[in-house]
Length: 238
Ligand SMILES: C[S@@+](CC[C@H](N)C(=O)[O-])C[C@H]1O[C@@H](n2cnc3c(N)ncnc32)[C@H](O)[C@@H]1O
Image 1 (cartoon, rainbow, N blue to C red):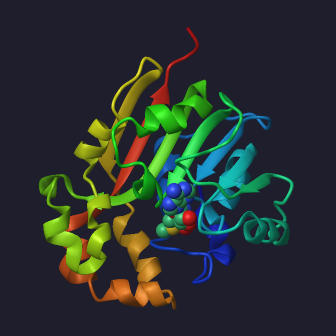
Image 2: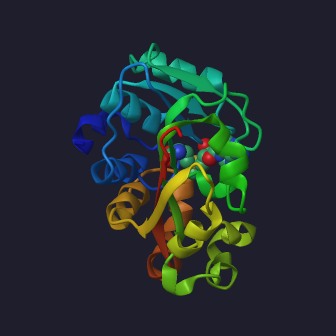
């Protein structure tokens, strides 16, 4: 995938953290999706819908763009403005209580958001798996702790993140949290390569939250954190 194709959409207004398009590009490059136009993809915690746009354009499949903080109306207006109103359905629901039809998504993608709501064991099996089709795939990219600091988030990140520090977990810990099920074929978690570039794009943005993050980048963010990639492959139908 060529990130340059999306340059005009990536801005201080559409970014909500380190460049989500770079994170998505690494996931797509490592695990290319082969989808048909009538396949459905859930972009969970899509924010302003920047990733939903890229997912729709790159896969040609139907995208459901779900977020909690950004309304469906706001995202819907943006999708029409971007010319993808027909391809993307905006939804505003809490990931803890989704109301989609069961067994419908061929893929679930979640960039920089899964850590807000899915950090407890059993979440994937109870809240996500029922909506996924057999043989489906899940691609997640989230900020986390490097493996060598597993379990030390509060001690190392509280100055920067305050009470949210607990959300940052290592690739090793995320593999345990996702866990197993008779519908899961495999789970792979790893430290992603896009860390520096995704952060550089965000820190250069004229956004008040980016200005705040700048103060902690060299002392906290760079030494202790990473982006965690999570790939889950579901089993084929029995
Ligand atoms: C840092 S933003 C990232 C947005 C976008 N994925 C991106 O990378 O630009 C985190 C997003 O997680 C979403 N989120 C947090 N808790 C959520 C929940 N319980 N259900 C659905 N979305 C949630 C928020 O609405 C927010 O837009």
